[in-house]
Image 1 (cartoon, rainbow, N blue to C red):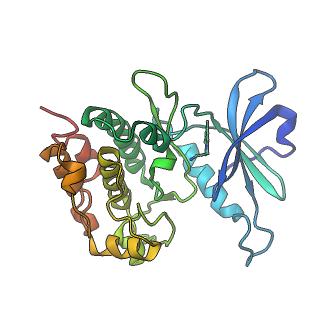
Image 2: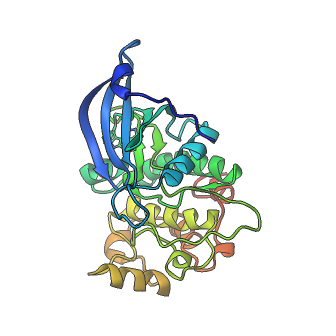
Length: 278
Ligand SMILES: Cc1ccc2c(c1)c1c3c(c(C)cc1n2CCCN)C(=O)NC3=O
């Protein structure tokens, strides 16, 4: 069970500029008054009443916190401190200054295969670690993959936002309809049991984007995108993949497999010949 400090976060942390907001709440840069160290403060409003669409259940946030407290890996963001009041919870998290991988790709349009492999090895190491501890992220997408620093030769990856993450208990079926259409696996749309393989589908989509700048299942509307995902309807358009190696395409093909049990695991992906050449 997570232990939250009572009281006001501003007694211990000076709040600075807003870094972002979304379903995850509002994130601000902050500085610990006693040490001067910078962190990210994630403010999550608590749902006022059961039926309300505003805010999150305390249980949801405590699940995210409990999961973060079990994870300690260089490619997974760290949780430093926790505050709770009646109306909101505040997670003090590792500050990741390099911004989203998404923006990094946008600036470069596409990456070389060597650059993509550099990032994917780190993503897969973080995901293999969390899967090894029976945690699935369930919202892997470029917005949730950030760079610790970006203007460095080999940017370090940090996986963030465990708001949809779940502890996978043997024999316990988890189903959910959350996630972002472009990146979610067919079993999410079909409301079938989810597993660590669900994350691996998302990694297949992320790899496709890293190499081409295009999203494999993107349709004109969310409904069309979801229909493309369920049909497994994607291709390696010559226009975007003419320079891409067969090994890279094979890596993606072995992840964008409709049957979850037939997809490569994170551990298997780390030894795929494209990722780990002989
Ligand atoms: C420099 C910067 C800019 C935007 C940030 C962050 C850091 C950031 C951070 C975190 C989260 C959950 C969201 C964040 N966002 C919001 C966007 C995340 N996709 C976090 O946990 N540490 C961050 O630095």
